[in-house]
Length: 427
Image (cartoon, rainbow, N blue to C red; front, side, top):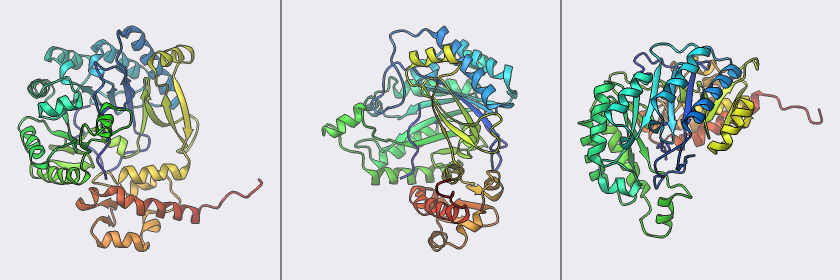
């Protein structure tokens, strides 16, 4: 499962380009079930007494087939099994989904196929079975190397079991294992957290994600903080952890290719890169989110889609209609460009002029930002760079992206409205 990205979720993408085509597709099947609910998690997940896996598997396959046909996808670059805890699903289910993809679209032999895994549901034998089913990259929800913190978070694993799982994963998927580490927990201090990160560097592979805790209403951790049982996380300490952590990772040879994601030896995640570069993705399963253009819609008139949340209701809808899409929202041209800007600037490459033009904007990056006084101030402060390559954050700017977007997004909106005529009233 994934935390909120820090700003205020196959194999390594060795040849990742500086931009992703808006016609690049990734598939995101969701397994909604977990062994227990972690204290900080408000994701769409369920703790079942029993799972009819055959029924769930058949519905996942059906929805894959339906949405691939609706989108007219011909090539899938990556598949990311998330959740929930997809490592609780059987390897047979994973294999069935991949087979359904390959029957309708081209799934290259070197496509990245990632499975999120929790240490307690991932013994070596099971990881090997997932590999035989087609998985070639793992993302392990380690979260902490402190047993007290793991208990606080409601995790079911210990530090020692997590490190054993990590070692087995690296043996089975060398160079293709990612780990998550959280920061900004209640009462967490900078020094001890940095020592966890240093220890993790002795065990981890070539991809690591840092996520700041987000206290979400409705979670056990939120309630404990509200009642005063736990202190509220200190945002200043979290910011210091983040800054010190990214500096430590840079010294260790990791490239910070996105606000929360770090890779060395070229091990960027294709799934992550496609997402942040506004490639199209199909969400499959209960509560899954997607962004794609319907076949025959023309241009880049994308839809934001959300699948029905509750698994039983989702399965009923899939059996009736072929898919369980609950909500469809067409994205306007300006909305899409806002996403392209906000997402692209999360990466170290930012927005190249070539990538921006792929979305057919009425104005260039120079037109929008080149002469703006507030943007010039950000450039002078060495927080932003605008040059022949495009628009991107500096190392310093990447850490304060949210504050930069408070200037950049209104400027984009202003330029858009100055360029695009308003519809005539009463038409």
